[in-house]
Image 1 (cartoon, rainbow, N blue to C red):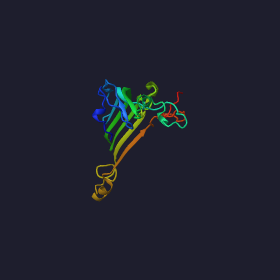
Image 2: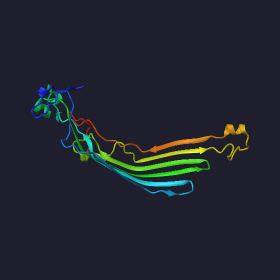
Image 3: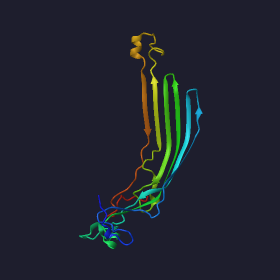
Image 4: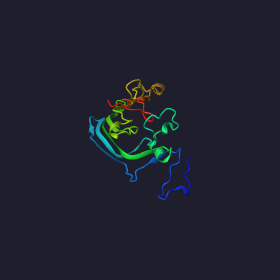
Length: 231
């Protein structure tokens, strides 16, 4: 846990020098509150006495989402051989003030959006079978936090984007025993053995998550993330 310097070290502006070896985060003087707007539209249709179908459109948009930045106090170039400063060679804040602390900018420069078609099918008990099926076809878009060299180049599918998602749950009461189609002769011993059994299942199918293509062989000394290809 880092302690702030004594009051005597504060400048007349009320600001304090950044201690070495401490990571600092720089925020805008005017903070913008992030917002999220959501909307949906659904239609329900009864297909049969026991079956209901509900298609829906679901969407949302995030605005002024917080995004972290790269350390501003690192060298953008490779230092000379045997340079004692190492990665601090030409680091801007080190050259200006002698400070080695990391300075990470924060801002509210991101936006996100999500659009999805969601379909739900529910069947109540029919010949011993109950089921519920859900299918989602969606796209979640946003900015990659690790790309600060131009936010527009980091816009694409979000890290949690799953284009296709299907879930199925079912319960099937096996047709054996008293009150059912088979072995319903009323013998208590038979009914206690074969009656009252259910077959339950939960099934899930989904497409994969997006991935980023990058490489680390660009020759950039202090690139804090892998470099992205432009094609």
